[in-house]
Amino acid sequence: MSEIRVGLLGLGTIGIGVARILIEQQELISRRLGKQVRLVTAADRILGRDFDLDLISSVRLTDDANDVVTADDVDLVIELIGGYEPARSLVMTAIEHGKHVVTANKALIAKHGEEIFLLAAEKGVAIGFEAAVGGGIPCLKALREGLSANAIESVYGILNGTCNFILTKMENEGADYADVLREAQELGYAEADPTFDVEGIDTAHKLSILAAMAFGSRIRFDEVFTEGISRISAADIEAVSELGYRIKLLGIAKPHGDGSDMKRIEMRVHPTLVPLSAQIAQVSDSYNAVQICGDFVEQTIYIGRGAGERPTASAVIADVMDIARVAPDGVAHLAPPMGFVESERSELETLPVADIECEYYLRFMVQDKPGVIAAITSVLSDHRISLEALSQKERHATQAVPIVMLTHETAEGNLQAAISRITSLTNVEEDVLILRKENFGA
Ligand code: HSE
Image 1 (cartoon, rainbow, N blue to C red):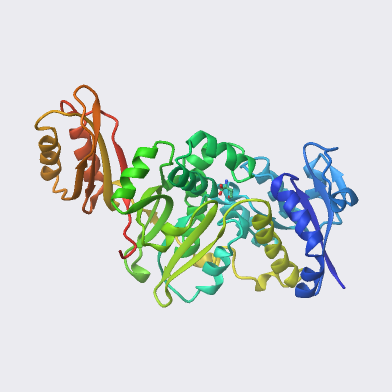
Image 2 (image 1 turned 30 degrees about the vertical axis):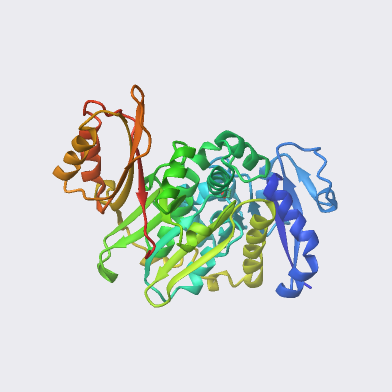
């Protein structure tokens, strides 16, 4: 039986998962592939760790990643170091040396994907990055191949396992934000720098990849409007729940304009109110969900584990197998990495944040004095912002109390202008929480 020879960069959580899946599923993989996947070398910064895995002890280990990306006996490099550098340089060197590359690194693809794809095409090698989005869910394959006959109308995603885990535990157990974040780190879900998770950056990396693949545009990570979950309190979760909603950190991408007239793409990441009845609201813990609407297929949803050792390794090895099936001579027959022929990918602009149209949840902290609500609603009325719900739950003679409102749809720029007028009113504090709402047909 022929084989594909693999070099591995990084023996952290996912690297160990990859080694483990290659051992545990060796026979299954060979039966499906008709070839063997053989790990020949692995690089890790800390050598001499006890990996407790026979496979690791039987391969050539090095602490110099350059040895792996330039090795003559490696056909395919799996990059699991994460982050922008040195991952970018190593991947580029691997491609220069004619190696195929599989990576789980969403930051790398979001930021440097375009130059990586160009070099890979020039060198005639394949790039796989299924594990970069949605962990173990084959959502990129679904979008790139399964839905390829559809014009995509929207993409919604719960794309960060850590945030979903935190929001779920805060809601179900009243757990403390910091404690749950620590637990997510221990389970191997969180990024090396967990602010990437909780501030929405990881979700924005993934959304920028999904959006470019959905709409045939270039990856524009830097243009994604991004807000995280760090300002959400247990009180907000409760107030939202009383209104019939749940808070999820969503990545949202939509095209603007019709068909070939499509001019701009809306891309945003923020904590979002979703109706309890929506399927995506039921996706909890570290599970991810990607909901894609195509013009022929209509709504589809893909749900699964979005982080962790085994699910991510599952996606990495599926990519290795796809490439191994057609390597060494047939990689041109693989679907293009971003789902469109390179010359057909366009330079669509990103919709300015001020033009995004949404319904909003607003939480103001105000002194409990006569006329405060009237003053706030008068400003909203000036800006033609209509209200769906309004409540004040607490009373307090001396301390600020929360007032919660749901608005009808308005443009973000208009909403922000109204908020800045409201926060300059007497008796209204500057600390306003603005959450956006999506109705999912409810
Ligand atoms: N930190 C990421 C998450 C890992 O929590 O989803 C998977 O990309």
